[in-house]
Length: 386
Image 1 (cartoon, rainbow, N blue to C red):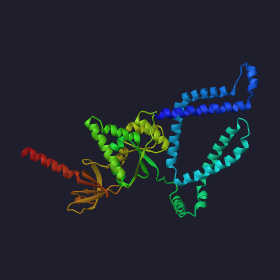
Image 2 (tube, rainbow, N blue to C red; image 1 turned 135 degrees about the vertical axis):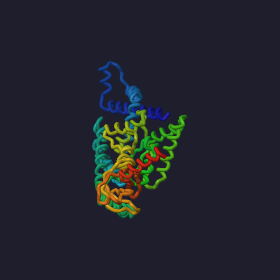
Image 3 (cartoon, rainbow, N blue to C red; image 1 turned 120 degrees about the horizontal axis):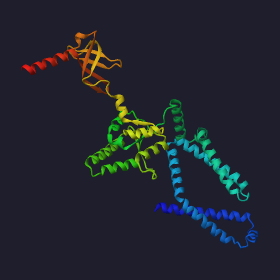
Image 4 (cartoon, rainbow, N blue to C red; image 1 turned 180 degrees about the vertical axis):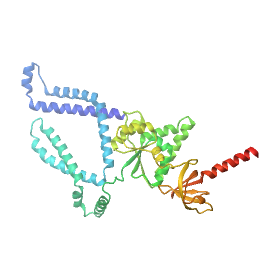
């Protein structure tokens, strides 16, 4: 229904444009002479009607293309305005107002120029408005200094200057990380958020929420559980005060797949995508989009050794418990060796028994390989003879 209304408005606008063009043509052309040349009487009333109808038909045909272009332009403007700091918006608005005021003064000089006068006025208004926008953003500090008599503005401007001087080159706190469906269902993003490693804001597109809802409503039990888990994880993240979670209400109706929509949104916002999806990861990287893959993060922080693996270390000192020896890896990780006291000052091969990862760091527990071998032989003998 809304699309039909918009299409009707575009049709009327095109018809009005045809009416105006015909009016300008009549002002320039001599209809009487033109009638003599053609041999048919030409009345201005019928030219208005014909021009209106022809341009209205053209508008009706071009309406879908116009709507697609207009919605794309609106989304592009929205993405830019969302990421633009408040003071840039204020400075840019003041600059546009100043540019349009100057354009209105100059437009009066072109109003009497036949046919192209109004077109020149529009071109001058657009050009000076854009110039005013750029100058307003670039010189916002100078423009806002005129309003320093307002205490709040003065205080905020001083804070902003302090932040700029301290943090030049840093990312803006308003930077977005776009979440996809897989990373929400995975759940590890909630633990990462609690650690405080992610800054800026998490952006959840509306089409991702819709996909989660469809999964949660699935007739398949496993899918339904995964969808509900994703919604619970998202709810818990949104309640955390550590990071801000925002919903992107826009959609790309010309794209069917959610992954393609995510890539388009990341391109528009120039923001990275948080994902676990291997295929999405590769597609996004091919298009120059930064990807934050939780699986790659897990691989980066996984333990350097696993229980059952062998290590060759130098026992440095005695441990806290009786018979223990302590060794250190190159990165400073402590290796506690049960029964390693007699190897102090020596290099020996140990077998890892336990790896503990805590907030304080990583700790490895091991036993000398010879001791384990003997205990295994003893247990084997007991099983055979006992």
